[in-house]
Image (cartoon, rainbow, N blue to C red; front, side):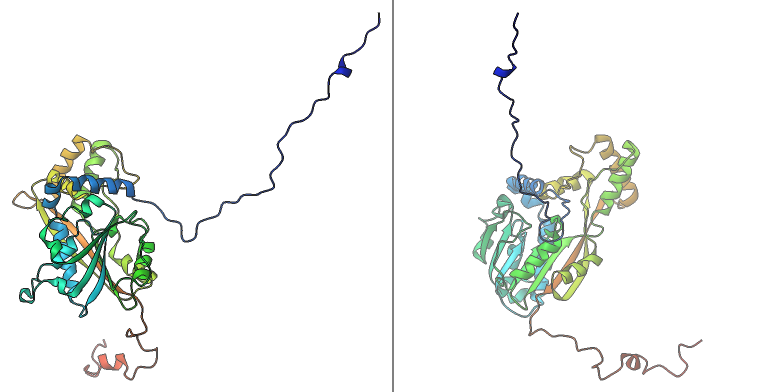
Length: 354
């Protein structure tokens, strides 16, 4: 019997493969220093929008922002010049604009402080908070323009636009503060000031310690319930790095008494100043932790009348954009007098020696 193979009738197998791509891809870092994101901008925007939606409650807790804005306006009056175009960065509910329409407490007979201001641009990411008081009478007493920002990290303004930039109680929520300060320097005209104030240092240290001790006792660990804040010793370096000259940095404390910790946290929530740290524990604070924190707060920090003090530490900063017309220090070695000889001129022979 004759046998034959069917192999001859089977076509040869062809190897199917995709052509190799000759393009090579690399991971490239974006320009600038890497930014460490600490705060959630989306969460902070939601907190402000939610807080501003209740108009009456939101206005009732403006006592802190109004007081700080008023003190900031006094620093503006210390500069003897007129500012045609001013930017209010992080304007919240336009607290600076409202305080500018009031006279100075030191010189009430000189009229409103807004005489030094031409047009003020109030910029903030929260549209609801920014327009919350748009129907109040102070809007007719000052030329104010409201500008809703896409994000508080990027300023959509051309270089050399403003004669002054003000900022009150908003910079403590900025992730990349050096970048924002550099942008502020860019949009300022030469020889124009940046005047700002932000929470910093040991703000709300009473609440911080009470919550930490209570959580350590009840849960055996500590969670992030309050935001980290910049220290006053770092602000001067940040301003200098951003290119500002003639720096001035000082601190001020405002102490507000509350009946209990729940009233304090309720006011912070109504201000839109709740915790927005990305690494925060989701959900509310446990009931047993809150009760323990109340007792610890009263024991460690309580007043004799039963109220609880809350300290808000404010860091004021002033920096000027460089200009050829600004006063500059003389070169080293060009002085005509020795400071050592001047300080020792009144000393008697032998004084200070053992």
